[in-house]
Length: 56
Length: 508
Picture: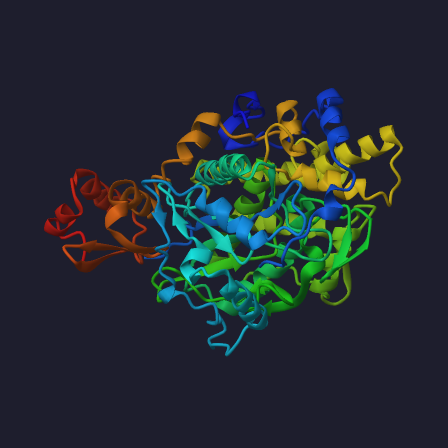
């Protein structure tokens, strides 16, 4: 698998996380075109095949 | 000496694993293979010292004869005995150069961050773990000829849950009974920002229905406190394994949390919990909110479709999870030492999130997993005409947690630029190799980097080297002062061989 890490953009206030104070954030709706493609590719039965042992 | 303001923390995450085109996948074998794909020169393999672990020790001052999970564990061991692998080979413990532990826990690859003293360190180390896991999955996929999928979540939607535990090193002087009484309502209500969201209601070993709830783990708790972690899980886990000087420290082992994809959520979850614990350590007798029915509240908050999160406090007094959280926020403001920048930052984020959740939960879709997941999947459901009981919803839920930059839905949100708090890439890459500079993990990591070949074993509180045929232990039990950590690190840096450590009286 190619390393996709370069695609990850740093947003917000960087490594220190939020810390933006008490003002309400402007919430953008994500550009869903690319995401919709990913979501359409998800096999509807993927979770049906997913079986795990109970862990802690 | 243990100080309330110097709380260390770390995260241990059990990962879900599957592989395409693999009918009846042996998840244990797959987990072992995945962990072992990280083994390479400079990594300590199969040398974890289990001798000093005691999961039967209880904080309440006694020792249980058996855990509820002992029977399951015995059955697993019996099944695993057919594998012709030793216990050490099945566990496949690795200690990495960044001070982390990576191993097969039952049937899940588990990544444990090293001990951290700041949230920047923790977020970088947790992210580094994701990155290491993804590299292992790529390698194993090539070997197997089919895609290995990893999921940083907590359920298979069939009632089988696995954990993401947090650890907080606290002063032993904080009485256990005060700690339990003071923290319970916080742990039950913090899911309003720490939940990872789930398109399912479950019970142990079974799927119940398709409704959305805000937390993945809240279906799986049925005790107020106990030492168990796999069956009849408790809100407060009483395991007493400090992995430090037991006279001075206790490790608070939090098992109730979800695995977060959002680094903002991880940061707020661990940061707020650390502040609540610090406030308790400073004044454990200050009255805290007491829930009338903590276990009922845990479920009802998670499943509340209207996000009102109403609870009853003792005396049947009506309240909400938001009000309970605001109490803890104000107590943290007034009691904690806020000289460290991360603490102020967490308080600001905590307050803003509570305000935003109160106004309109959707405003938090850029920060909190449960809101981001719910919004994304509901919009998809609406645009595609997917019914509420379509199992596609669980599949999309699962893929939100996929550790794959090209396929995972959470990572897709990050790449679209809307998620806040994404850590600096440089820090993450560094954390894949190097330990935090501020904790004893620095010593563990440096020993692995320089002397893995001479290391006989490792544990959180010590490393043992074999030098000239004799065993020598470097104790980390009391190693928490910065000057002490840096002094020992300097000695290791200067050593050209393990024998040099002997001459420098580093080991005993």
